[in-house]
Amino acid sequence: QVQLVESGGGSVQAGGSARLSCIASGYYWTIACMGWFRQAPGKEREGVTFISFGGGDTYYADSVKGRFTISRDNANTLSLQMNSLKPEDTAMYYCAADQRACRRSAQPGRIANRSDFDYWGQGTQVTVSS
Image (cartoon, helix red, strand yellow):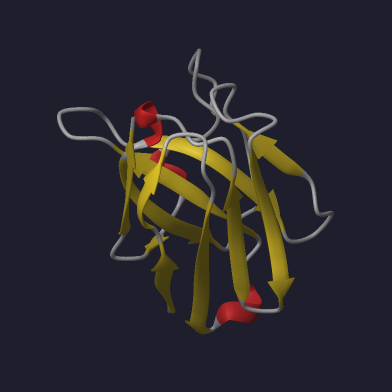
């Protein structure tokens, strides 16, 4: 089992930055893929970015490319640096991990499927005001 705990987030003005962190515990060394999803009110949870722990490959949703950066800080900590934030980035952000290799979603417009991740954090809110 793997447990995930997110931190960071909060309220920020449009154009500003925020940094999220996710710490994994339990059998964290078994994680092969880890990343972030977000869910805005009334919308589906969507994949934002994820990283392969094997080769370090990273994947980003088109909506955040060039603004968000995912990084693995150490063996059990993941970070998400979010710059140039927009009001449409407002959402609950969830850390997700899986023991299987990262794989892109076959669905158009998606980089990841919820079903491909077995472990989830409780979420941390990011609110961007205009």
